[in-house]
Length: 123
Image (cartoon, rainbow, N blue to C red; front, side, top):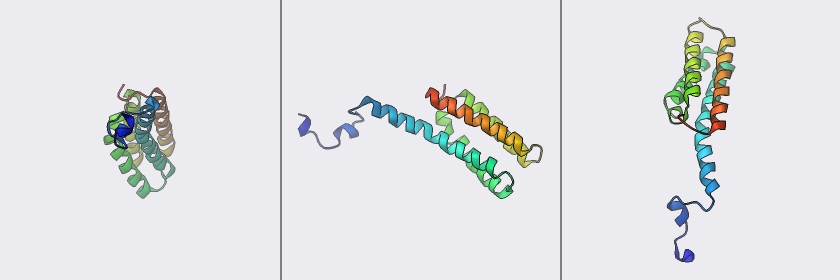
């Protein structure tokens, strides 16, 4: 019977031969937005002295904030993103320095790391 099925049948029906394949796909899908967010955060902190780059990276961060991250964030990550986005505004307004930006950025990275380790979005 198996040999009479068309090639790719298992893939097209969403059935995997190995149940771990589904988990791996979930982990990649789940962790990918975090990677983009952390890269955007790192670019903001690393280029804090360059206003043009900071503005560009802040736009990218906010795009992820309102886009992909909505699907995977948990409460801790959401709060850390809000804190970091507020710090960006304070930094751009001249009310805060790059050290505070780094501190909030590191807090965001740690929140993302814990969330990925838990593996449960929207908790």
